[in-house]
Length: 261
Image 1 (cartoon, rainbow, N blue to C red):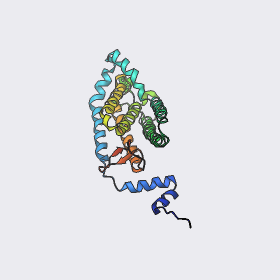
Image 2: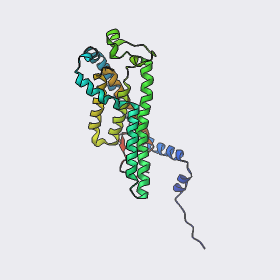
Image 3: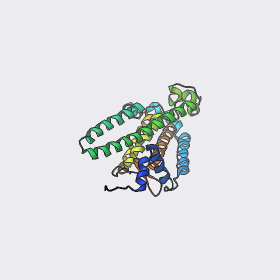
Image 4: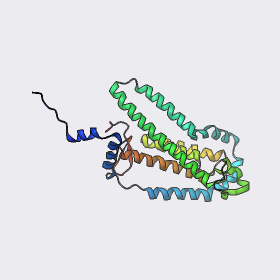
């Protein structure tokens, strides 16, 4: 007589579930584990920073931007396009290709795990940046704030909603929003280097002010929006156990060195 092998009931059920059903079960399990996140505190803080920048810094910088050092403007102009969506996606594609070539040198089992995890990380960063870009461009068109280039005609209160065109797309800064999403995503993935990533993001945002195409409040709003979206997407991924796990305090914790479960 042959011997029968049995599997734990949970294993059989797990195998019968479709991928999206397994993800849904992961979400349900993790949904009750997280603590309350300070969304309201973050929103109030970011809003107050934007308002203060608007009231205190926009006018003097709007008046002074034409008198900045040409050398400083040249340096800022050389780095500012890092915040373009196309530039960020191209950089992500290059990093993905290089990482994939390195992974292929590993053993088959190790390669399979690393490739899957790399794809999820790229998906997280890309989703954060692309979502931010879509939202910020809809907002800036709807708000229609005149750029500092038109300060003499409009001042800081020049708003023409749905005007369209480059000169009326100042608030929020799309470059700054993309940068905020990218570098906060990297800070969440690699917390050891979070101060470096945040510092680089702030300087890239400031480059939009230096070259005279955005007010400080535009940049502050863009950075805050991008940061918020990257954090929210990280929370979503952590609920499914993808890329991040959920800490006891509710914050996403990177799973860069852990198996996929």
